[in-house]
Structure formats: structure tokens, C-alpha cells
Image: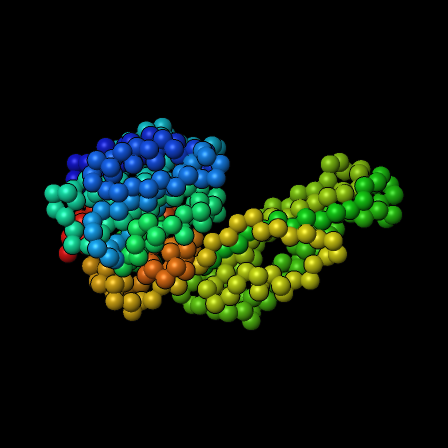
Length: 365
């Protein structure tokens, strides 16, 4: 493994880029590194000015490979870490630290490759995209995606480096998240029958979501590559009321739809008859991924993997945004998601070495 991967990952982990917090220091550091390596770098600020994304290009001509990652990580609060989360540790053949698996290990591999391209120029361009706030429902990439092709050109292949144990993932479900709000009229609970209880509307809605899930399981679209093999709905949070003896005048339900590529969240949601006065607001969304296994570039890349069998994953990624723009896109990165989001998150050192060799051989082929 190149000597540079460890110090690069050490620095990346040291930036506490928890989702929703600033990542400017990390982006500035990466920009300086890529500038020195001969890349043309464009920084795309977030609307709030506290975060940014980055697009970078090395080489001339058309096509090439785009390596894409998010720079944010999940929080560490409430987790029982035995190591300092934002200081890289090494033990038993693994690097430990927040983001090592999801997905700063991948970024370190790409940056280690980037630093060598002047010495051994690739035949086709090497492109990099780094985003923000993926862990909050892919909030950053929508503000970047329309700049990708104008700034970088159209890649032959986009590799989103989420942890897949170096398997080529060609599909995952899309997701849309929502807030449903319900109004009532407040009053003393002794007179409850004379008032409208907002929690009753919320309860009716949650029951409707349950019935919808049953219908999707029985008669909805199916894709046996996924588990479960159908679209799902899930109510995760219900809130309402201020005191037991007051009829609630407001309630809300936070819910999500994880859908197959053949169904849209709007079509699924339209099957629910809403209680009178209910208001639904979409709070986030990302598209699913359904890559073509017989795409020539996808086939060539997959053939170089330890296990070339196409796979699907349950978690979501930013890959669907690139695929929607007509860019052949797969998800393939070092490590496994079962190690992500955990206390003492870690990645096998040999995974990073093998992944770096894989992408080096790919761009220099």
C-alpha cells in the first residue's frame, strides 16, 4: 500500500465533518492538495456558506472516470468509543476512526492516486466529486449535480465509493422522507368529545401507512434483487400534545418511502386518503440506482474486481443523481457498511491497499 494512504486518512479523519456542520477546512485542504497535484479544481459553495463541494479534473480529452464521495460523517454522540473518534488509530490490521469506512477511506485512496498522476499520466481524465451532507438525505449533491458535466465533461464511468467490499453495486432503492401535520382544537380533556384531537388524525394516518405497506408487499412492484423485494413505507417519529389533560391542537408524523426504481414516491403516496386538513411536506429525497449490467464500461470495470458478480444494497447513495444525468454509474468502495456508523468505526488496512491498486490499474490501463 502506498505510504501516503495512512497520513491522508489521518488528516481526513481529523476534520470533524459531522453532517450539518461546516466542512470548509476539509475542502480547502483537499483543494490545495489537488492544486499541487496538477488538477483543475472548482469549489461549489453551499447556499448557507458554511459548507462546500469540490469538482476536480486531471488530464485532457473526453470521458474518463469520475470518483465521487461525500465528506460528511455521522455523529458520535451517545456511542461507546474506546478510541478518540477524530484521531486515527491502528489496531489488529485496521484503521479506527469516524469516517474510515463511510467514506473517508475511499477518499484517501483517490487522493493517494491523484498525487501520482503527474509521474504516470492516465490515458483518459481522472475526475473527482466531493459533496456535503449526504448523511442528511443527500442534501448537498442536488446543488452540485448540474455542474458536473459542464465543469468536468461527461465521464465514461462514475464510481461512488461507498463501502461495498469492492463489489460492483448496480442497484439500490430511492428514498423520500416527509412530515405530515395535523391540526386540532385545544381544550380541557374533561370535555374531550367536544374538541378535535390532532393525535387522532395522526393515528389514522399511521394506520393508513401500515395498510399501504401491506398492499405494497402483496401487490406492488417486485425486484427479487432486494430484501425486502418491494417498496416500503415507514413511520419513524410521531409527536403531539403538551399535557395529558389538554386536547392536542397539533401533531406530526415523520415517515419515509423507500421505493424500487419502477415506482415513484408520489405514486405510492397518492394511494393514501389523507385525513381532512392534513398537510404533507417532503423533507428530503434521493433517486434510486438501476445500472445496466451489460454496459461495456461497467462490464470492463466489474471484470477487474475480486468478485465480478453484480450486487444490490439496502442503503442509499448519491449514485442515482449521476445515473439520472445519463452517466454510467456504479457503487464500489473499500470496506463494508456493517462497520459504518458504529462506535470504533474501522476499515481493514488491506482493503485500502487492494482498492488503491484496483483504481490505479483501472485509470492507467
